[in-house]
Image (cartoon, rainbow, N blue to C red; front, side, top):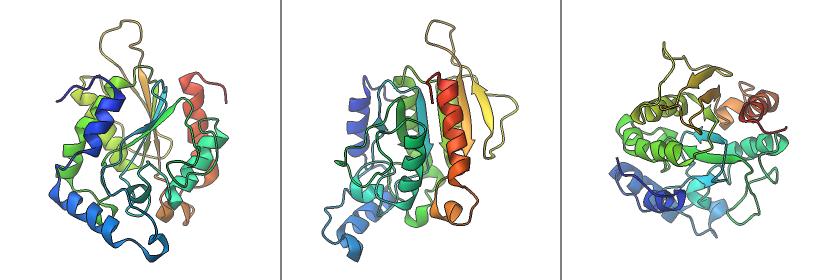
Length: 240
């Protein structure tokens, strides 16, 4: 596993990644063909790096960039319905400077929070293959290592939940036993090795993913997501 000295170095490596031929072909085809409503956009069309506060106590992990969301804008959870829903909850919880996320230069700033995903390229049908998730897992592992103030991880969806547990295992963090089952609102404690200052346990919280499929059917409501964000803020030691 490559060790990176900073989040900036890690993000440079993520943006340059071409490990998965299927994902490279798809993300570039989407960027080339575009949707008619975004015909004037210069699509990002590359892997999407993590974004947020490098001193974050809260890490939020999603599934993958949306083909015409982050694959278009180049910023996690930006430019699509999932991003709108999540950013509104982050803003209400005091973790974002505004309630909207439209493009990379819209002024959005995260406070005490960092956004990442299990897969870094937009996948066909929004379904990365197991081997593609495995190829990306090292990036998440390095984010866990480099976010030294991390106290809470919010996994947005089952795929993200599994990716976090696997990444923690690669770092030899002590995972819960028995392995926790994914459910909205589920909570588990992951112990960092050592016991030195700064090695406090990390709380893993689970939420349904803020996809249109979940939010438009009422499986995930704004109130449900806000409650998870509020708990994350309280556990991280920041006022709501």
